[in-house]
Image (cartoon, rainbow, N blue to C red):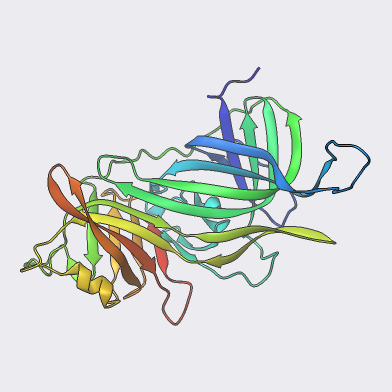
Length: 329
């Protein structure tokens, strides 16, 4: 018998694609929640034979994999002296197609990449999923991440990974050593929308000052597939179309910015949001410069006041691989 509350996930960047790493609970533990696993997923085909009587025939599995998903708090990595510590979710972001830069005395920066091959180094993770004393290992795992920054809540990231099947065994759960940085709630004191379609925190008019925000979500929207061929299996990220949503107080159409016209005319804008105020626990989410369009704004309500809900489409510049930038500092 196993306990639902006894779950542990560790993740480690692979040196070679699909070759399971030896994860350590001391260095690779992920502090998160809402852990879920589908230990055996895949495609099946029926034998589809006709006999002289009714009845089932076997469904034969032709492609097997496993999936896991979980939430992680959106925080910085901490700071040791003048050096910025690596955030605990760094390996997870890399396996979602981000390239990591920075470190030491400069902030950690993550920008999306376009893979050049199925086996690019440092782009996949081995995941150990401890379900109490049952251990499930996923190899060559890659996935997707989405962000939720909602007022009066803790900001979170949701990761969803697909991996090749590894060992399943009865293994005593190790003692984890978590990299625990305390999150701070989304609020006026902790969260600063810096820029949004030409509106900034320093704006002095209704058309230049940022509106009050309720929620921002961003979905990297990776297209993750299990690619099975004779001679090899790979989990691949075959495309990316980053999108999101935003909810903010509806401006006065007579004196404020008309976001319906912004959306209709496909005007380009920039989004930048900073969460956290203490060095080592600050995260900045930002689009490319003029790398954002609005999609279908509509009215909603918050405590009796009109809000605008709009879709966000994140666009790369001509250089590519820059539609979403994450900075931990």
